[in-house]
Length: 255
Image 1 (cartoon, rainbow, N blue to C red):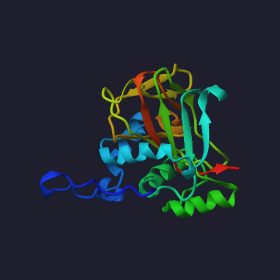
Image 2 (image 1 turned 60 degrees about the horizontal axis):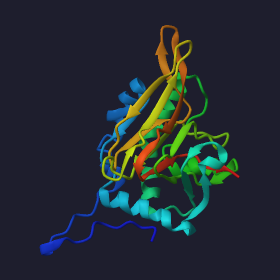
Image 3 (image 1 turned 90 degrees about the vertical axis):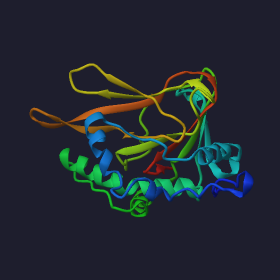
């Protein structure tokens, strides 16, 4: 049940070829081609990262509570309205593959950001090695999650920290199609720079599109050298239908 297979055969004996491995979808240069967007805008888009069939398969996993470690009803905690479930280990095959494939090139961006901010922490090239560091520090609970919103639901601006070890980038993939499955419910990312008012980005995602963005902060070049900007993200109110999202956080959570 956790493995999402290729598209089923179509009529007249034809079939859809199996999807490419996640690492192949990033291109030969990994995420180097969008590093400039992360540096300039604080986010980067990966259009069509997942197929429609993969999005539908991941959305369907929400109905199988046995593969999740916990569920959060956001209204109970003043997080917003809607709910989400954190996957348990072992992760579904596609989620685990996507997490590892994205981490590898993003670790290069993260290490460059750490150096610009004069921070000593550096991240290993492979996600398995980074998870080992998290687990040794007591952060053992998986953080990839499925979020679901209905009409009137929303997600307040927040940061996904979960412990002392924090990988500075994360990803979200929209699993539903705007205009067909839901209306409203835009992804919102804010940036707070010192001594200026907050800037908001409202990103027009389609089904299967991914957005990569900072968990907490990032470096921005200034007249006197790099300085930190603070970021938060959320989802505006869903007007109708149902909006499903896959969240990929690379650090695990403390107990």
